Image (cartoon, rainbow, N blue to C red; front, top):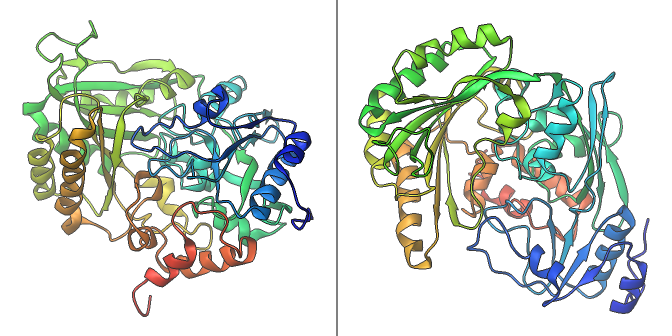
Length: 468
């Protein structure tokens, strides 16, 4: 175990690193401080460019000695800004992004700084894939540790359900492997419990035969058909095989896409988007009820899986506010509320994304993963994106209004990756009865509370109602 008692100076840290040490004004530093959510403006004292495990160990020792806060940055998609810390040390692990695929064992070993686009390309070279994010620039580690919702979840479970092993560096500088045979309690915690146990430097994920072509795409409808389309989406998914994974999105139709009918460009619309994880012919049949509605634009068809994984990427460079509510179902009363509130969406990239769960998501319980709320039929997920800081209050109020609207239909649980900074009580509902067990794992691997992601787990346990 690396000793943390040695007085490590800035010059010594720089000498020990294989990567670089960066300060304000350095181009690498400035690049690291640009996150997906431009509302986040934090200025760390140092950015450590980590390209090896020893860099992580040295950076943690330095931060510990100088009593500096720590953050870990990979994809930079934490909407709450947990990829940065003010006046502390940011460990930028983007240089640790190697991907090794074992097609015989159907396992991928992935560096802690990799993004999903690279993983999908590497695994698809062998006709394999695992559940990955719907935004291809998202970091693999962050998404997996927070659950990992994606198009393959109904067939193969969440990303965290496919986590076979992980390597982490603890706050004390110890390199620990978590698997079913080694530190299994830590593996359990990492399957959706967040990244507050250490710096994840590598993950091993189970792979499944997928592609290289899948039946996927989207169908776009005018907003005045919202009730009809959302009811059809609900009914189709209620009886759908696990291979079918769809979402419904309220949106502004692109105004610069020649494939979108002129009457929809730049106007309120909604889309059914998703894929079939099986034979192409079966996918075409499964999507027939959606296509029979007669969409204004229909882009479903055979496409490469890795290409589809990049097709609905959220645009960078915007201010973001996210929230979500996991719901038991979408009765007509809930649909009425959603359609009414969606009329308030500002023009531009904002959306209300309604994801159908079920299938393999619901098959795992608390013995496998700390995530609660797997019995949800749908997740209603407003994503507010805008450019002008003067619009902050209006958009955040709208996001909270959506959540209040859905409260009466809620399972009572939440899904961590779809939440911004909503406090420890909201985060506690993501883990339910597993919160106290998670806090115990936190105390074992990070007793000093060095890692501050996914709220502070000591307070999550405290946020549980009496008797939970």
